[in-house]
Amino acid sequence: MIGVRILAIAFLLSLNSTAIAQTIDIYSRPFQAERTRTFDVLHYRVHLIFDEDAKSFSGSNTITMTPLSDSFKELSLDAETFVVDSVHNAAGEVLSFIQKPHSIQVRLSRTYAYTDTLQFTVYYHASNVDIDSEAYGMSASYDLGIDFKDETDENPRLINTLSFPEGARHWMPSYDHPNDRASHETLLTVRPEYKALSNGRLVSVTEEESGLMTWHWHQELPHPTYLYVAVAGPYVVLEDSLRSIPVNYWVYPKDVDNAMRSFERTPEILEFMEDLYGVPYPWIKFDQITIPGIGGGAESTTATVLGHVTIHDEHAEQDYPSDWLVAHEAAHHWFGNLVTYRDWSQTWISESFATWSEYAWACHAHGSDECSVNLQSKKDAYFREANDRYRRPVVFEHWQYPNQNFDRHTYQKGAVILEMLRGILGPVNFKRSIQRFLNDHAFKPVHAYDFITAIKDATGQNMEW
Image (cartoon, rainbow, N blue to C red; front, top):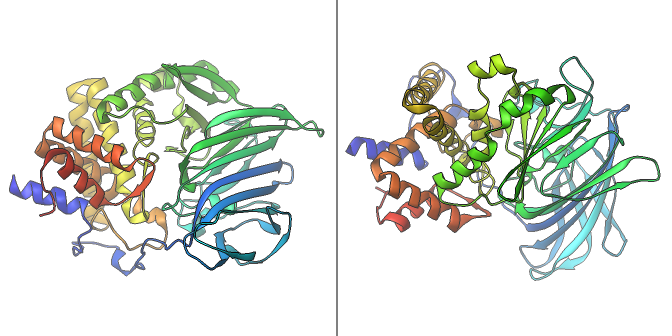
């Protein structure tokens, strides 16, 4: 038992352990620290106007922020793929800027103090958008940033963003790192036959003089840019609910007959997560929308993106049920969205908890046999990576691309260790620890030590040894 306890805590803390039997030298990757901020973004207001035929868009982003120091005169934003046309302050004055390959540096019209709030708008455009995801450490099939998809036998023509992990910078100038959270509005001007989805509540749908339609969404509660999303296409929206919370499924027209089979347990899953964590669902809605090109999902706040292969016919659903993926992405709305990480070394806070939560759902929904098989499969997946590729602490500060931290150490090993910790603390104390962690750090970036502190505060047990 003592050995198990030490192993569990060693997982949670960032220990400098030596890799064992590894074939990939992950320790040669550069050390990464939490990014230093010079400002705090309060709000983004993004407006994108799309030209699908040219695979192009024009945009504006009005950014409201406060300095984190006095004598604030210049700032840098993450910006790629698009060309910045101009920058204007709130009074309409033109601001000077320098655009670099990965950023834009803006010089303000005057010096601002720590207590000030400032606002400016960046105008930009992009033509013939084609982002090489492999250049950012992603698979070629992952459409990082923004993508214009042509019609195929599998999917209609559509537009989608994938902001995870650092893709927002390809469609909006922003502070694109997880240790800053902001509210935002997203306005999407699209074809009249399209529906457009983003985070938060739908404010309005307005017809423009051009005949295009502008969908205006407002995410009022702050979250980091990796959770921002925009999707537009000829979707059909199937309506459901959890109490008074809208739960909607955005699907291709051809998938309407099968969609409810894959998504019908969503309200039950959300209710299960509420009970599992002891914290009510914290957001205004829970939409799920399907796109091509991804096999799993992305936990965009209030608007989860799922691969279109999530929807099955009645025969496939029996062998490949979708509820585990729905459960995983739903869990992120607490772990990864409500509490977020300070930097990419802390990805276990999102993925370990979501993977453990999908296991907990399997035990609840499918019985003890499936529960055992699910847990064993997670152990096996981790050991294959540990034996064949590398071993590392779950909290790990060496990477070239953020995506390198999203491996079987983060997902499966983390989930198994959380279940071990549940065994050490007992189900009641484990739930109390989770509840304390979520309540104390809601809408904040966190570190592993914050969870250790929550355990101590909730149960009196010191896990720092």
